[in-house]
Image (cartoon, rainbow, N blue to C red; front, side):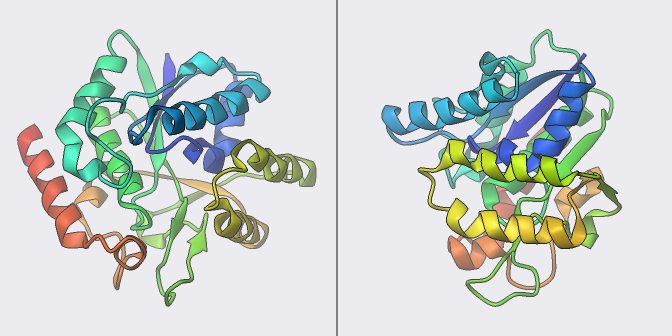
Length: 247
C-alpha cells in the first residue's frame, strides 16, 4: 500500500512537505515519481541528488525518488508534448505497486508541467478504480498583473481546502529545508510568497475532481502564458488528444 507522488520537477515535493511528513509519521510507504527530463546529465544528476538529500534528511529512503521522465522526451517545460510517453513511464514504474493514494501539483495554471502531472495523476487514478488524488498548490497568477504571482495559494475553483495545523517550529523547519535547493534561483521569488501565504491562509491540500482537468484552471491569463509564453490553447490541445487516446 503506497502513496505515490507524481511530480514534474525535482524540488516540487518541497511544496508539499507537511503532507509528506504526515504520511511518513503514519508509517505509509511513499514513492516519488518525477516526470520532467533535463538537458544534460550533470544538471539531471544534480537536481535528482538535491531531492534525494532532502528525503534522507526527512528520514526517508532516497531511492524512492525515481526519475521516470529520463529519456521519455518529456523535457522541462514541454511535458505536454510527450504525455503518452510520460504516462507509459509512470505505469511502468508502478508495475506491482498497490497505489492507495496519489499526490500531485494542483490544476492551477502556474506551470504547464505541473498541470500535466495533475492530468497524468487523474488517469493513473482512473486506471485504478478512482483512488483519491490530493493536490498541492505551488503557484498561480490569478487576478495579478505580471510579474506577480501567488505562491502556495489554493484556487477556490479546485474545491474544499483541507487545512494542516502547523506549529511555529514545524514552519521554521520547513522554511529552512529550502537550503537543499539553494542553486535554484526560482526559490528567491517563490519561497517568500509561499510562506507569506501559509502565514495568512495556512497550508492546505485539495482533492482532485477528475472533471477539473478538462476545464481552464481559472479565468483570465494564466501564469505560464505570460511567464513562459506557452498558450493555454497549445496545452489544452495536447491534453485533449491524450485524454481522447485514453477513452
